Every structure is written in C-alpha cells, then in structure tokens.
Length: 231
Image 1: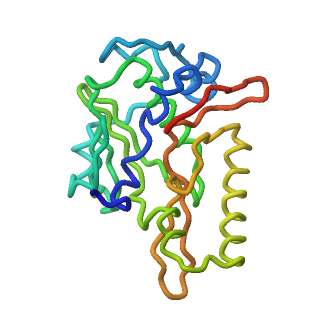
Image 2 (image 1 turned 90 degrees about the vertical axis):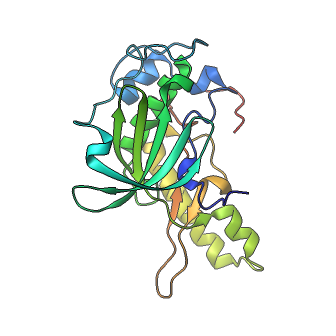
C-alpha cells in the first residue's frame, strides 16, 4: 500500500462534499464571506461551467511556467500530487493537479471555497497555501510540501506517549484552533490522520501541521452546520 507519509499532500479537495453536500457545498452567504462573491449551487451535472461559483484571484501565467514538476507524491480520486520546484527561487513545493472534467458543479465550488479558506489561514501550524491556477483543463493548487508523517502513526509507533508530549501537543492544537475560530473558520474534520508531525531531529522541536481543509466552512455566529460528515 502507498505510504501514508506520501499521502499528506493528496488529502482534501472535495473530501466531504459527497457525504454532506448541504454543509460542504458553500451557501451564498458563506461564499461571499470566504471568497468574495458568487452564488453557489449544488448540481450533479459533470464538468459544468464554474464561472458562477466562488471566485478567486487568478495567478498570472500558467503553472508550468512557474513550477518545474518532479516526482509524483501520491494520487486521489480526482487528483495527482507532484513535488515541484519554483522557477523563481528554487523553493520545493507540492502541486496538486485536479482534472476538471471529473468534477461536479458542487465540487468546483467546494474546491474554490477550500482554497479561499487556506489562503486566509497563514499560520505556522497549518499547511501553507502558496498559489492557485485555474486553467482550461486542470486546477493547480500549490502548497508547501508537508514533511513527516501523520500524528496517528506517531502515536501508534510510540510505546510511551508521556504527559509532557501530550500536553504540548494539545497546547499547539488549541492555539491553532483558536486562530481558525478567530477567523470564523470551522475545520470540521480534525483527527490524528489530518495532523502531520515533522521528523524528529536532535535539538529541533517537531512541527505539527493541520492539513485537509476539504470539510472546512466559514462559520459565523448566525450560521449552523448540522449535517453528518463522513471522510
């Protein structure tokens, strides 16, 4: 089976839409707050024009002009993820390549909502958004390449998970969730499989990263999200 470590950047992208369309597909109010306009609707028509959904700033040029693709890191139902290098400064990133003709109308909207939320959540313990390209046949989502494995695997591997480690983990997670909630964002799929831990190095504190914002929604005080989620 494919390594869970290699799959960290393949997660999200419409991860909850099929099981909870009412909440995961954005409402008009939610879209306006997170992405700046457009009315979202749910449709089962494959590959519809996505022009009336959430709108995002389009990066100038094409992905291939700005990033040199490398090895494939993993794949999902709708996408392939590659390691890539920035042509401008040599930064190593992860590029998720998503084929448009595989998506339903609500998938287009959910992806754009996910990207708009990630773009607003610049935090050291959240997978960092870098770029987004909306091209004729594909979407390209560029994020930092998440190193290390899942928290789930780290817990399983340890024979002893002491109180100090557990306390530090919870502190970081609560601070990060506080950051998200101050931005009125609900992740809605927080679990050990959606938290990565960087490899341990002597003298360097491992870094936790929350990933997979496929179920995330803007959550204002006046909104309720009550659908059951399955991911």
